[in-house]
Image 1 (cartoon, rainbow, N blue to C red):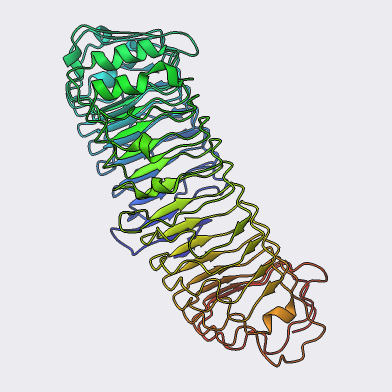
Image 2 (image 1 turned 135 degrees about the vertical axis):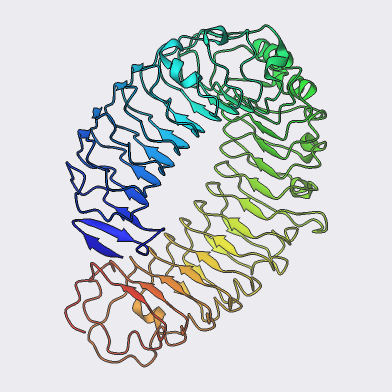
Length: 574
């Protein structure tokens, strides 16, 4: 890596060369760019136009990023020598018109990103030279009619099209004069549509249709001449649309030729009494993903999912549930991911973790005060448990997580934990990541983590820890990252051998504590003496008087260290 006129050049002088010139205040393309460059990033500069000479010598370009500039014009034949270019990013500029000669030469282009401009007009042959174009992003422009996008709909190779947030009022397939036979993904979200009319069979291969937040708060009408016009559809996004439950039910029922796998129904003010979930499961029994986030559910009937037995992912976050039971999900034998985040749960039945296929359970940001999952571990396949943002006060028993023998990640941050009074369960032999940040812990007792022999990351940031007993980190021979920043740790604590046994530790963050010394005199017991594998040590911003004096042997033992961050310490003597 070396510098070139304010830019960074990475990679060998050949096929992998990347030139990074983003955010360097350029108003013109640098003339001295290496001709072998393959990937060029000119984003976040001050270009107002692109000229024909700018890229003439860069015939090997495959990726060009000129996003987040002020480009309003692109000269004809600017890209005439870029027949190898595969991706062109013009996002967030000031383009208003796409001329017929603007993209001449881009015969290999597969991805064209034009979102967040002010495009109102696309000339009929603007994309005619792009014989391999697979994806166009035209979201957030001003293309208010399908007729203004005629050139797009003539692209027979197109597979993905994003035209959301353009001010479209109607989406009528009869207005499409081309046939997008290869289109698999269409995004028309956030347009003020009043009507979606499927009266011609132009989307035979469409797999994904995003209509989220269409209508602009007004009602929207769907019309199908033949429900089998969307027979390949697998993913349907309906979040935030202004449709009544009966209308949503009718729409999904009408897609009788489609075997939907993913339906998103977020932020629709749905309630328990709507019975929409039962109806959807009845109409589309092959669903694997169902999102119901941000509605007004307070409870679900015992058999609500009895026809959705193929579900693997279920999102019920941001509703008003106060309690749930395994019985609600008893038919979901293949469910792997369940989110109940941002509800009002105060208790969770421990049998929920015994769901036969459940691997990830998100219970974050509820009102849970106690958790006790100690049933037989034989059936639990849970690998990730998120309890962040609850009201847990104390971890009082080694049996609390005894049922979770396959757990890999446990998050208990942002609770109100005052104490961990017993070691974590011996059953947690596979746990690799434990987060306890932003609690109110003041002390870590001996053997607290002794059973967590596979742990690799321990996050204790932003507690009130001032005491760590010798042996507190016993058992953590595989720990690689220890984060204990923003606590009340003082110098005397460091000299008690608290890091002994951390033979695999590679990163230690201990910034924003209370480490200070009166002189540079050698310490009897250097704090990091046993950390032979440590590579990164972060000590920044010690409170009180700060780390004014650094003992002569403070870093003794750090034979593998690569970086020491010691900024904002006001050190006067070393």
